Image 1 (cartoon, helix red, strand yellow):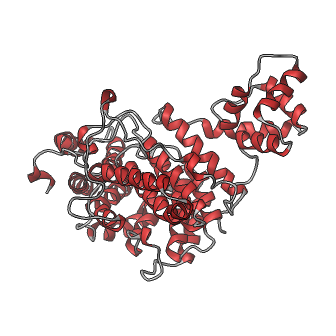
Image 2 (cartoon, rainbow, N blue to C red):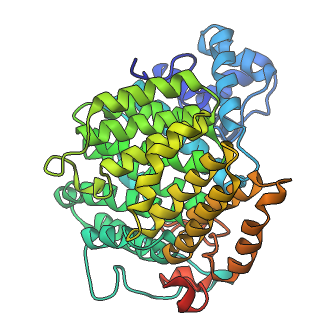
Length: 472
C-alpha cells in the first residue's frame, strides 16, 4: 500500500485566504464585514493577515463569526483550526524563529497538496525571494567575505562532490553564499533569464538547506527549503519539489518533530512522484517510513518500506544530478535505520553493519549509520559491541565535520544511562568534545535575510575541530 496525500481538514490560514478570495474580498473588506456582523469595531485587516499567515489563530468568538460571514459550516473552520494547532505544536528544540519557518513550510506544502500542479504557488516568485543585501554577522557587523564555491573550484556540481566528503559545518557558508549569488542573478535578470535561472535557484536552495541542516541550523534549513520548493514549482519540476519536502522531512525528524516530518514526507511523495526516477521514488518512501516509525506508526512505516523496495534501486544513468549521493548501500542503510526505530534491531544489524564497514572513505555516512548500528546493538543488549561501534562512529564524526552525526551519537549516549557496562563511551565522548563540530546557533538565514550570525568558522566555510592529528 502506497502512502497517499494527507486526508482530513485543511490548514486554517490557507483556507481563510481561499474563502475570502472566492468572494472577491480584500483583507480590509473581510475585517469590515466581521466588525459589522459582530458589533465589535476594533478588528483590523492586520489581524486577518495574521490569521491567514497563521502567525495567530482566531479564537472561538471570531471563528464563529468567520463561519457566518464567509457562509461556511463552523465545523469546517474548527477542523482546520485543530489541524493548524497540532502542526503548530513544535518540539522544545525548535525556537520561535524555527517554529515560524516550520509552519510556513508546512502551509506551503499543504497548498501544494491541494494543487499538485503548483501553478497557484509559484508566482510571482520574486515576492518570496530574500533581499540582495548580504547577511549581517554578530552585533550588526557585515558577515566575513569569502568565496561562493570551494577554493580552487566552481559550480554546483563541485559543491555536491565536496558534500560527499565534508560535513555541513565546513560547507554551509559556501552553500549560503552561492545561494545569495544565484538570488541576486535572478533579481537582476529579465523575464527570460529569470525563467532560465529557476532550476539553478531551486537546486542551490535545496543544497543550501541540506548543508544548513547538517550543520545543526534548523531555521536556516527550513527557510532555504521553502525557497527551494517555490522555485522548483515555478520551474515545473515536481520531482525536485518532492525531494525538497523529503529533505525537509528528514530535518524535522532529526529535530524531534515526527508529526511534521510525516506530513512533509507524505506530501512530497504523493505530489512529487509523477515523473520521478526509481531512486527518487524509493528515497521519498524511505522519508515516509522513517517519519512514521519515529511517530510510532509501525504499520505505516512497514508499508512505506515495502513500497520503497518495489520502487527499485537508483540507476546512475537516469537519476537527476541532485541525487549524486544516493546508491544501493544508502537505501539499505535507510531501511536498517527504520528497522531500529520500529524495534527490529536484529534485522537492522544485518543491513547496517556492511554499509558502515564499507563507508570508511565517507566519514559522515559511517558516523550517522554507525550511530544507528550502535543503537541496534544496544537494543539487543550487546553493550560492548554497541560501544565499540559508537567509538568508531565518534572518530568518523570528528573527521566528517557534521554536527548532525554528533547529534546521533549523543542520542546513543542517552540510551546508555544506568548501564554500568557502558561507561566507556560517555568518557570517550567527553574526551573528544574539543574536537567535535559545533552545531550552528541563532538560526542564520542562508538566503540572506537573517541578521544573526553564527560562529566565525562557519561564516568562512571552516569549523575549528582541534588538532588535525585527531580529525585526520
